[in-house]
Image 1 (tube, rainbow, N blue to C red):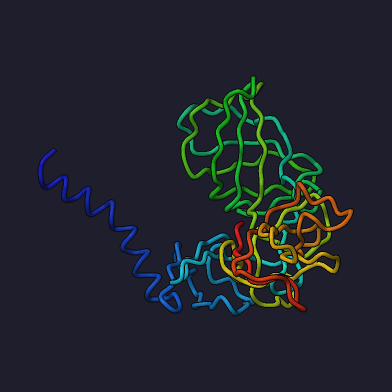
Image 2 (cartoon, one colour; image 1 turned 180 degrees about the vertical axis):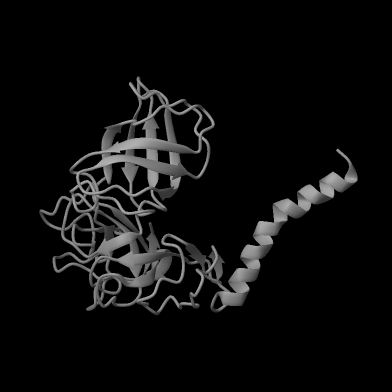
Length: 290
């Protein structure tokens, strides 16, 4: 390969990164790095601001100057600041048969959407509703599985039907219509709620109250913050040996030792940062780890 070709390759490899950095400094706040471009007609949005208008793709990553990490999210209802926000949906396409064969290297697949699939449980999935979600494709033995991100999908009406899903990369294992199966997860940062439920998990924590459904905001996966404790005792951090903290089913902070609670398998929230015990307002500052 000649010198000219190497120079061209170097330019192409760094062009997208250069655009990303330029976008972050031009449209980010406080020199944050936003790993994605602003939507056409969008406006810069602070981590302390909700918006009725979508400014970035759902799931966009934001790295703050201090290293904190946030995701751009859409609410499914009102959210309380410093309480865990949950992804509320089941798999949007349950274990289903492939609707068409596809060769290795394909960047789209067809899946059969059932009559009870989708957010409403009626088989309806809107155009590109799955963007930012994930798909797993099983072969006949389920020994070979392709996991891919979803960049788009065709619409399916109520009652279900055949849907084409566009992938973020080519598949390795061929899809065979008679033996291959698929499962689909929606975008995990869309439709977030505060709910008391043992089968749902927390994906982010907002730093501000969110006023209702269909609001756009930055939710944090990694930061140092105070988290809302539950009402039982002992409070997280009351014991000097308690550094690990967990989420209860409602998204509030608990410790494993709470009487009768049985939090051994609860979702990990992070760890207490300071050399301190619980105060009147609950635990000390926590290093969030989602």
